[in-house]
Image 1 (tube, rainbow over the protein chains, first blue to last red):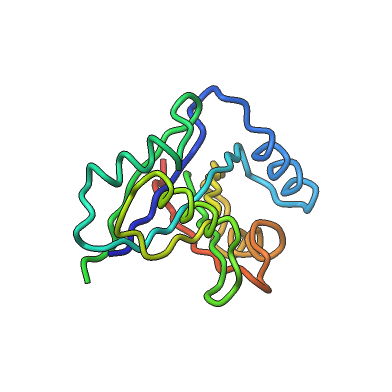
Image 2 (image 1 turned 90 degrees about the vertical axis):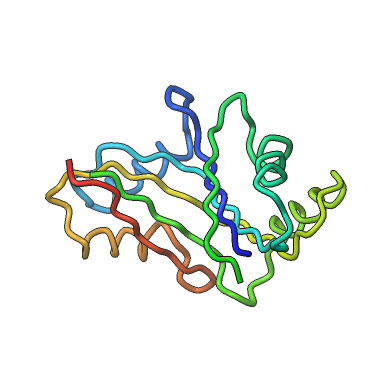
Length: 79
Length: 79
């Protein structure tokens, strides 16, 4: 089973990487970009026996820093 | 308009970050994890006037390294 975990900074948390990307896009001449936030995408390939609770626990224990980040779990397929 | 850009390593490209996460999950006692790949998620807030071609060019010029990475553009809403 393919699982995508999206980890993004919570609103209000300073995002220097996003600001750097924003600045670089403007430097390249792209217009109309209002905001950029940088996050992580973690693609897991797990056995079908892995429960939603286990996935949630992986995120809370390791993949995301719950103090400053939110996560979203997308289950893509059940092969 | 909210746009999410998913950047992931191409298949076959070594992913030390993904391996480290995989190893850490096993160390925490999680079972059934077959593979982990680490990528980036870039959340853009752009004006509605920004074309698909411009978004594509942003990815190719800055957001993704086309030699080793793939990208996918998800347009979330047209406010």
